[in-house]
Structure formats: C-alpha cells, structure tokens
Length: 205
Length: 245
Image 1 (cartoon, rainbow over the protein chains, first blue to last red):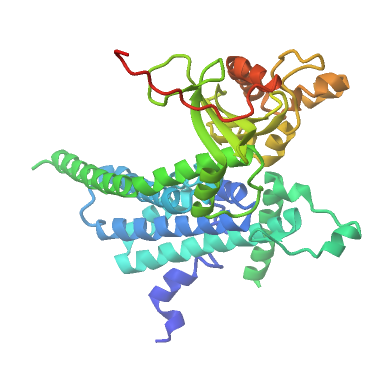
Image 2: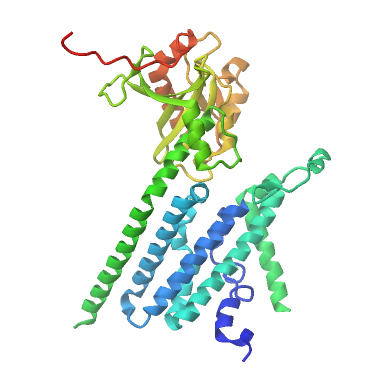
C-alpha cells in the first residue's frame, strides 16, 4: 500500500485542503478575523491551536474507552481548557509581546469549534495515533488559511512581511499608499470569502 | 457500583489531574512571567519619555540597562523633597525622573485610572518645564479590544506628545480626551489641552480624562516647582536624624 493511501496519511492530509476546517467547514472564523492583521500573530496563533488540537485529540482518544458517556463533553472541555491555559502561560513567559498582541484570543481557543468538533467527531472513535495526526492536520489546515490571509493583509495593509518593509521606497514616492482597509476586520471577511470561493472551485474540478 | 458513582469518580480524577498540571505550569513559569512584566513596565517608562521607538525590537538586557542609566525612581513629597523609600508616609508620591548629565530632563507619573471595565495602568511623562507632555503609555488595561483597547496603540498615544497641562495663561487645566468633532471646533489655545479620542470609546475616554486630571492635580505641587525652575537636580533623601543629639 502506498504511503499516500494509508489511513494515517489521510487523517493528516484531508483537513489540509479537501476538508479544511476554516474554508470548507466554516469553523474558527472569529479568530481568523482577529489575529490576521500581522503575520507574526497569525503564525503564533496557528502553532498554539495546533498544539492544543493535537494533544487534546491524543488525550481524549486514549481515554475514549473509559470516559463515561454522560459526562464526556465536560471531560473534553476540561482537557481542552487545561491545554489552552498551559499554551497561554508559556506564551506569557517566553513571547510576552506577542501574547499581549493576541490578548484574549489565545484564551478563546477553548471556545474554538474546531477543537471541540474534532474531539467529538474524530478522537472519540479513532485510535490515539490517528487522532493525533488528525489534530496536526486540522491545525495545519487552520494555520494555512490564517497565514494566507495574514500574508495578504500585512503586505497590502502595512507594506510589510513579518514586520519588515517589503514595498520599495520609490513606490511610495510614486504615490503608492498602503491600504488601510486591510487592517480592519471586514477585509479579513472578504479575503476569507474569496479563498473559500477559490478553494471550492479547485476542489470541485 | 452505579454508573453515576463511576462518572463522579472519573470527573473528580480528571479535575485533580488537570489542576495539578495547571499548578505546575503556573508556578514553574511564574519567574519568567514576572520578569517580562517588570521589563514591560520599564519599557513603557522609557517609551513615555521617547527613548524607545515604536516598532523596533529591544532585548530584555538593553531595556534593563537603558532604564538603569536614565531613570531614577523615588518617592517625592509636595515640597519636591525626596521621601525615604519604604517609610510609611502619606505625602510620598512615586515618581520617575529622567536625568541626563545630572539634571532632570523629564519626569514620569504612574497612571492608575478607572476605565470602563477595569483599571487602566500606564505612565504620563512631562518635560522639565512642568507643563508640556512628553508622552503617554498604557501597559495594562481591560478595555474592549478594538474600541477602548486602542488606548494601548501608538496612534492614540502619540497624540499626547507636545500637549500641555496648563492653559495659555499658565493655569493648571489638566489634559482631556475629546471627540474629534469637538476638538475641530476648539480654538488653537484650547486644542493644546485636548487629544483626539477614539470613536466608539466615549466612556473609556471620559474615565481616562477624569483619572488623568485627578492624578495631575495630585502632582500639581511638584509640577509647579518644575515650572518655576526649582527642580533642576535630583532631590536627595535627607539624612535620617539620629536620636538623642
């Protein structure tokens, strides 16, 4: 059996494009609007969510046969909340400036529907290894959308890439101006909308 | 064993394990976080007097050494005299002095104002003429992100630079935050006492204006001494008087 057809590979690769959590399932839009003004915050947010998602899937999947059914959601949420708080504390200790910029949004990963959604639909029914890969895949899928949106917003909105100016000075002298609109939340809506359109067209063909 | 009992036991076990993990993470990382908060506070003091540029990265070490070189932190009383640190005195006001070559260039007041959802903490720096604002920064607040939360952004804070806390006759009036529409109708002299507010954050502006006024009036005796050029050198803590002599 080829690698690309194994179940493990599929668990990781499907959420990247075909079943992307943001652009196909329309989950996690809120944070995608908020943290994509700059590339740096988008990358950190994507990494934090991937960490939480992969480990919550792993933990919940390893406990799936012993979790009592009537309190399974409470247990899932405790696991997710614990991981999110740990991620937040680590950011505060080592990436203080970024954690200030992300403000409440790291804490709000708890309510990100992708995390709870994957725990319920995937981790409860699959082995820990598969669930871990599914978490990584979904995190990467979420991250790829975030980074694409941030790339467009930061380049057009501030003329920068990762905080470094990339638009040559003579452009500005010739009358080029940064698009202030890209810095505002509605711009993210429009870009995500266009991405969804592009992706649905590509996947269909 | 009933199912309910099993569920309760499982929930308890989960809760205990989760809380142990959180306690470990929180207490293990605390020293790093506290250092970050302390450096961030120093960075804001340096930013308020214009020593740190927005958008440039500074290492922890640079900030600590810049702070040590330029800033003297002390308690001061209304007469401009230094009060010994740690002494229980109701007259002592905390102040940060920016000195260069032995003379005071600017002084920084800690801001602790009411906000819409919680306290706003920051610094207001005044130049040594005692009336011109040199800068304003916020390092901690709980205002609505995107609305009142914009007070932490550079575009809002840079409006403070060059504003005055006295009117054209030299009387104390504090500095206020006004709606852009209101400031447009003001005379040039009045404009010097107001900064443009944030749309959608009227209440944050109102609370912050009141807070700034309260703090500035508290420090007014010190500012008056600056205005009359009586505060050129860093005041020294008076020698403790010995008993029985």
